[in-house]
Length: 359
Image 1 (cartoon, one colour):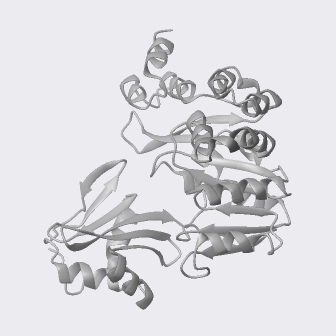
Image 2 (cartoon, one colour; image 1 turned 120 degrees about the horizontal axis):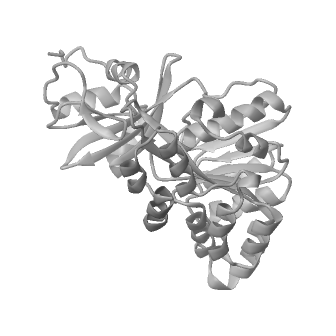
């Protein structure tokens, strides 16, 4: 059984990293647990139940004095730390039942390519735009950060430009290749997203990554940057391309929607809505993307506010590299990578998917 007196938080992360867990979890009154392939599991070995002083000691070892103070005042804290050159750990510290707890997301430091991720090469073509907005969407834990890192790495290798990222917290470290990178972490390099977004246009950026389009002001700023000569990447927590557009439009007052549709039609370049789906062989998960490419026809539908046409245009847009979630799932079922039962669980439109599988 592990000795809690000498246990370090990096020991837990190392263990999770070695067995390819996505998260390590701590809370008072429970053994350390992990999430692997979307399922909660016990960490290998014998582990005692954690007491409050154990959890506090482990978490304080990776928190600055400011972070400790913020957590005491607000009972919430986001932070990140690194394990040598192996991974970064995005951590949310919170309270449950009055005691401290944390979920630590393990993000390998090596940036994987689109080919390694199983994503289509049409996405690499989107990185060659000089301006516009590219959104990567999906539920929490669907690999959005990993996909965006792969896209930024293509730009870093191919272009001589200034890439600025604004993240809370900084998740994947990029190092200068042909590009020059400035990575700004909220709470460390800037007080908040808003002042960072106001300042970013004065930092001579060519490419901007906004960690999350979380409110109306952030979305307005992202659109504005995409309209004024910058290529902007960001994320939205939506399950499909249609929902992404609907969410953005409905964040604004009704009287602004017509003008906003015009702006979105002019600046949007692509939406990647992805899910991580368990493999049929039980060896991990595969990413299944829904891809919307803003062809002139798609842009016209957005400008006119005809979002109901978007799904049909994706269905018929294979020539341009588009696909719906259901088309991606069926392709993997036919290849034997995922099972029909799992595909139905992750379907965009269940009735349509069942019909596609019968055909």
